[in-house]
Image (cartoon, rainbow, N blue to C red; front, side, top):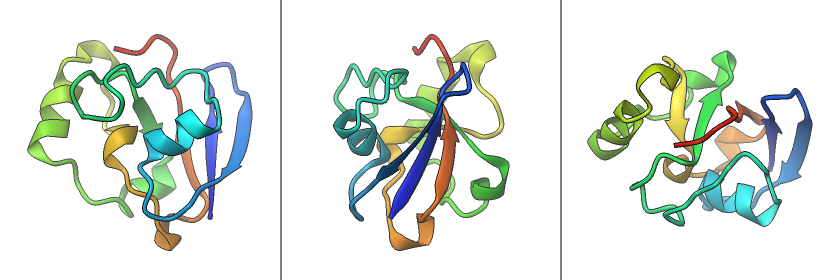
Length: 106
């Protein structure tokens, strides 16, 4: 399956992703620059914040309470389409997923 990361500067990186990996694992494996993931994907830092492209938002399960609480620490950076990459699990249903990486994580 493929995932498309679009940086804050507009750089587009289309990468291959194995199903069952978290989106943060995919980002780390492919050196996506604006995904810091300081906690290593444990949903405890919000430095893997992504903005899910509008056409994909409704295809994802809603954030769980822990993710929602972590997104709250983003304050003015949180958007309606904000998610943590560590909480999105890749699957064939998400083939072609597009996410934007905001500058300045955490």
